[in-house]
Image 1 (cartoon, rainbow, N blue to C red):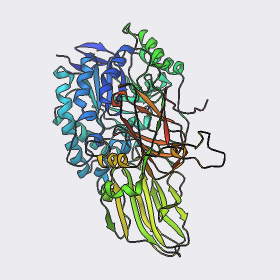
Image 2: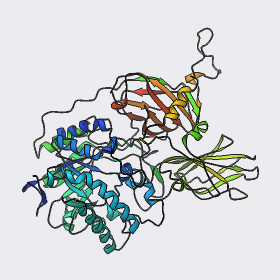
Image 3: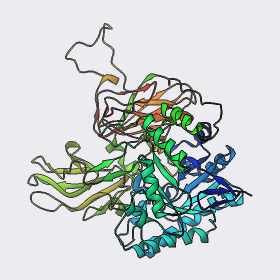
Image 4: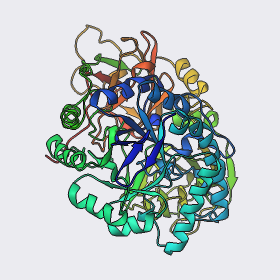
Length: 615
């Protein structure tokens, strides 16, 4: 059976020197019917290994469960890697960062403030014991030592960048995690991974485990730093940053293939092993994108294209071809090249049925009553939206919150009056001088995935006040759009289908609508918060790209599958629709628009539009 070991200078596979050339591909960011295609394209680029994180909150959305259905089927993913003749590296965290909501840590895990975060605290370790046991049940039978593809397993992730606990406490925590993995049958090499500087490598590694480093440039210098911390054994860049992620409201990040290629060539020429981060980024489907907060809260976009060699929709890029040529200088690569992606079908989809969100709230969630406003975590709302309601008087004048996480639409008797926003630190809005029902629709835009704010609660934080008093007597409703399988709830689509179609009223003489006359039907603006539905026919199994220009902010589902968030803040303008979702007829698009849209149509366009760059 194959055996992987740590040699004096490099990896040994079956006793022979082995240089790993790997690429990151996260199964939970790719439709499962497309896993085999993406894995095959990795082999065709010259890779011999696939690396993946395991996102704890994907498998355990609630305490006491570990789901492996559909897109959570890690075992099937690893079997497909093996079927393509490739090896695998598994990185189960428990913390993964990955620009994924909460860095992979489940919301329920840290809802109790007494639970430690990324340290040897008993409640935290007990939960990790359960999680590691479930992961190991999948990974252990698929290790290289038993004839499977898995070469290595990571302990924690970039731990050197987190916290300031004493070194002995940090090492105790890492050793506890390593011992837990060993106890559950993981016998391939364990490793740590940290940024390639002295501080992080010291604080995040253990002498008895393989130390790897993360960087995207200055290869010779970074490898020398790693060698100082690991005098013998393989040199490996576990995250060779060949692109970068995007945040809402900023530029789309791109990197020059030639610059990346020079650094990759230097890595391979030095005999170091490498894992491209990312080989294929994929998509933050649903409400899974994370956020960063380094003084300014920045939620991550739905697209996780990453400017990777394989684009979000699986198309080879210029970077793919450049990297393939570099790899061919150091080992043989397959002669076959993946086919280029053709244009996607183009059409306009009228959304001719709509219902105000307020009319569906009772369908979407159960209302709870509190004297003080709870956080989202207090009502087990681990993602998405929660509606808060109470009464105000004419004398209240202004609404003030200590903190909002992350964004709240404020309305009085259903009429919009303002916005509370974490990114802009907006925590107060004026109120009309009248009594009425105050509503706050609070959106969790992604849990922080990096730094000291990991694990913080969502929703309204602290008391809510006005010019005259503290507001009490709250009715709070978590809005649960998805059923247990993650599909848009049938009650929502049924209600939208039953809504009266809205079609343009024809002009009596067939002429165009005169100037100054308000538009009607699908040309008319649409006020939110609202849910709108439309249908389309197209090419079954073909990838599509949904353009929402003219819409402001919200969430989209196609055939019940949540594509993710859109936002006019950009850079991203399209949402990727994986081909396996698309039927030949009766495809349904449902849009939750929070603010308003210029018209009642969406466009399907020929290719992705990921936004403006700094160039």
